Length: 571
Image (cartoon, rainbow, N blue to C red; front, side):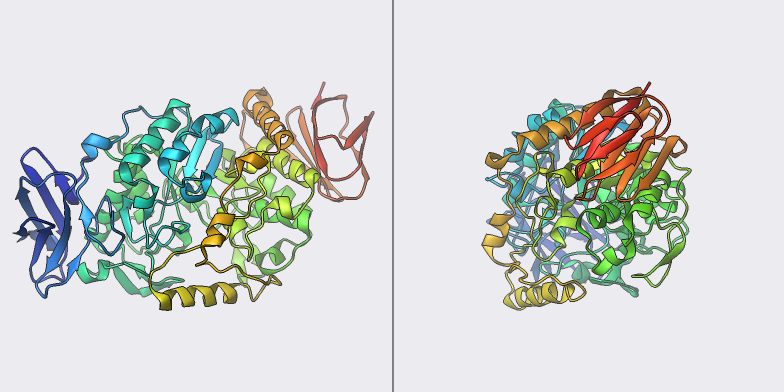
């Protein structure tokens, strides 16, 4: 498949062609700033089209309704003056990445999730590009960029985007993002982009003025659901996915779909299946974030993988003892950790207390490559009131134990920026909305969110200091942590027994608060309790491969002085 831009403003040799779906409009024109107004022709299926002779890339424009309203393009590629301002024409043929796709197969993916605004001091895609060698040196094989769709102001996680085709201007816009993709490919890294197809942000969203993009039939935490029963709405999101993964567009090697449990479609062919087919036709991959624990995402819709949070929750509770909120579902964490390692996730049809119903489907028959797991990610850190990382919640041994489990289990590991060197900076929730009423609503909502927890002193999401505190500081790298991280990932990469990701070859058990994870001749022993303990090893002769420094091996008995990890090999 060879995709070419279709929606929005598409520049060519003689000028620019415009196409927008606006069935609610009586008439529509393009107002080119500093130039003329070009009437658009009503075409079939609610689209308006037209051509502006002599209008080139760099020109800025609005769509003008018959009542005088001027709105940015729903398929804008750049909003240089913010989401309320004019759109700018971008020639993707001039700026698209030039590099071929990184040849990283699904089963070899090891993700580092980054947020462009806080990954560097500059907070831009070009600045992030300079650190792609650092990610490759840390033995990551993929960089996953949090959402870049244009949002209000300069500071946001990215999930309040309202212009899903536009790379946020404060990050450097689409040209800088393309250079980041090229920089990743130059280091052999796959580049993934986080996209949001379940909602739009609350400020600067004008889609409903153009057409019926939303339906009251389904409700989401953000309001009316996106209406995927409308063919033109489906086409809008299909075009968006292709804009990011096509070689003529963003050149990304894969997409991460945000919170697909908030996406509703009653069509005979689910929109996720249609997106997956389109993305695969471009040679790219697609992975969903989901709290459904449902194999239909892979088996029915054809996605390549799903995030699986049960392992994270069990590890977190084992290290911290927390029981508030959804961590209440993971009390007595060790059996749940064992099940998640052997079967993909713990909840596969049992009653889940926080949901008040049975939850999940069996998944042990699927290979590890279809699951993404972590000890930390932007959600699990940032959705705490103060955004603390594990470095603030456990000791060095606890970090080593969690790192060993995530690196050496069979699913695809994901790490959050700086986790490889035990970054201590929090990742707090921040926004920069321009509407004071909305800012106050966000502040109130953030405080309400933590009523089920014991956390207090919620940082102000609108304060610039909240954003600055979340920026990682490379001057505070823990080199010992980085060496441990690299030694684990090198073992994952090189040891033959760790190449087979079939669950049938995974054996996990727990002795007290100590996990034993065996894959063939490789045994991972991870201690999650601070107290010394002794562990009985499986029968056989064992030799040490890696040790975090808390163990003493005596025959078939292993003495652990506290939290930490040891990797052994039989034979």
